[in-house]
Length: 586
Ligand code: ADP
Ligand code: MG
Image 1 (spheres, rainbow, N blue to C red):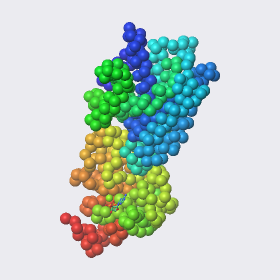
Image 2: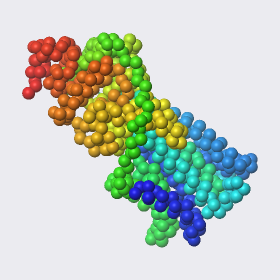
Image 3: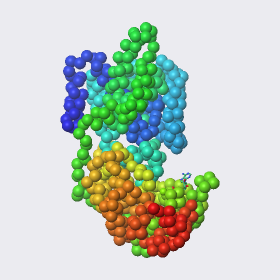
Image 4: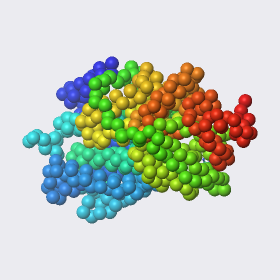
């Protein structure tokens, strides 16, 4: 049915100019296409990666002015200027992104507002660019000898580009990079733990969105045949964001829907409102503002989410059954010292969360880390995995120091983890969530994904994801949305995701919380099997039966301090542990 709708849409789109449609509507459709290009970029940037930009109109302006200036003053061919426009816009976006995306995410919207405003005034004050009057007499784009002067001929070039952008964006979202991009929205901790360079991927999304805006600007200049600063100011920047939000920030088709709705609504309101109000003015801006607030309040996911929910769910075709297996890392020899935590300490202000704790984990061993709530177990995990910097102390992994390394670098070396509070991408399927764990085992980038040149690697990644899901007993949930799972299965999914990284050391933070008895038994079996394969496991768990059953040794913590360390029997027999921990159990 989805395919049917798509074919219908493409056919109508293709036939529109040859039907007796009034010129007015062809022009409308052209504007919608121009806006949609920018909104598709915002879907990637804001909808998927969670980075809000009010400054896209400025990037459109860069593309438009580059095209206008070079074609009018230097007589260059549009087919040449488009690349120069992309290079300039991309370069600016790279620098701007590099500076602003390092700051906390609140600064980005502010920075884009500042940027949007300053470019507008800059354009309006440069003599060579005609100040606020802009540049006139921009030639039409020639296409194999045909001048795309009429709205109808321009329409085809534009909409072919829009569709290429839409499919490119959708292909990107359905790829290794796309999963990483979606993972940065909820904060970078989980993505980094899966080996994603979150800063880099944010900059990539920012540049990509800017490039799409630049192409839109290039087309805009040759469509209008004149440019001036006003369509590239902050008002338009807000409107682009409005299109993306209204259409459905997470959906590529939503960008086109949003552009369509906003453009048509704007025209209607522009003629209607002044009549109602009895005086001229841009009253539509006020209506847009109100609608935006309402959408954010009552329909956060926009129009397309509403449509999408009524279409049959997309079920991914399983085409990876025979894909080559991913290469595995050389496992440490049995008994090799894998993790060496030496007097690590973490202070939060005056609170000593981890107080000079030391312990070791050897290959093929399961070490339990137990203690009452607030004992410092999760913090210890965060110190080992580089989520938090240690106040002092040393962590060595396979003989090399890893304290001070970025989380993703530690992941790269073969440390993988789950989180006490499940961190996942609720809107992605279980399979895709798990495949994110294999991020470092693939290498295909943005261009390969957009052009679908990554399919062979993608099949191998998905095959691995399915294999790990099967191992943990979750294969039948693979096509479900992760957010629809109960808490127990979500935890199991996190373990499968961690295993996808092919770790040498696995850190599990309360994996059995919320699991049913049968699921717990399955978990015990999997943990034993992993140990048999030479994996080392650090296990934080409150279920004492499970801990006693599965661990080789146990470290007991209380108030940040290591109380004792010993075999399950020794720990159970220790009066100190009984007093501090087991004694409080009911
Ligand atoms: P556990 O996992 O053993 O229950 P945690 O490691 O989560 O314990 O917490 C240990 C102590 O450190 C607790 O007192 C907790 O409130 C504190 N703590 C943990 N994370 C932070 C933080 N980011 N900032 C301040 N205090 C923290
Ligand atoms: Mg904890």
